[in-house]
Amino acid sequence: MSGWLAVAGLGPGDENMVTPEVRAVLAEATDVIGYFPYVARVAPRDGLILHGSDNRVEIDRADHALRLASEGAKVVIVSSGDPGVFAMASALFEALEKQPALYDLDIRILPGITAMLAAAAHAGAPLGHDFCAINLSDNLKPWDLVEHRLRLAAQADFAMGFYNPRSASRPHQFARALEILREECGGDRLITFARAVTTPDERIVTVTLAEATPEMADMRTVVLVGNSATRRVGRFVYTPRSA
Ligand code: SAH
Image (cartoon, rainbow, N blue to C red):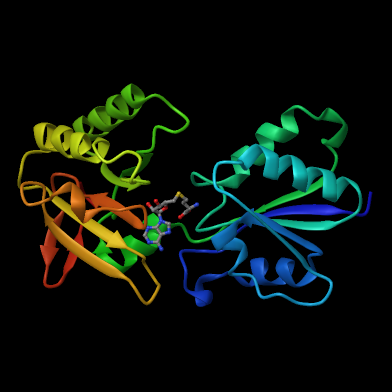
């Protein structure tokens, strides 16, 4: 088999945040597979086939990539941010698990800058000590589990990053998440809404939980909640290393 498969993170948006490793693998690829808007970030060239697909067809996409690579193609599956953070790397292994004949295929996962870390950098250092990341979407897991993890993370005094906070199809869940956070953390806790980070539309707003409204988040927003020691310093937000 001469084909290979890379699962690559394109970073949060800015082309300067695509790693040289990812750039190099894209330059060698014969096929790029992924959700339409991510594939659109790859420049077309001779000899490269771009396969854009709809959202929520991750396993089909992974099967397609495995098939092409096993037939000799040089395939890159693209994700935004990091491919291992609520993205295609896990979906790929889920598909691979069912195909032992392909276990020896040349597969590489290439990390990228995830939204939470790009957002934290532009806000200051809100994740400067222990933190966790929670996907607020219940597309793939029950909402009860989301609430359970949220509550326990807040009780453990983690700083938190929330992906997929709110979409048109699930408008009420983020409101519920804010309620839980207010119950567990109180109204004074700092919350940062970081939208379209590293793109021309970037907007970063920090308020208290008491001031936060569900409308402050959408699907292009990653939400950061500080721990009990997180505070403002000038225009920045940071979490001390001792807390
Ligand atoms: N693999 C991606 C996450 C995919 S889930 C990563 O590592 O970043 C999609 C969610 O990521 C969005 O709903 C949003 O919460 C977050 N996100 C992705 N890009 C973003 C950006 N540029 N600014 C803010 N949030 C972003």
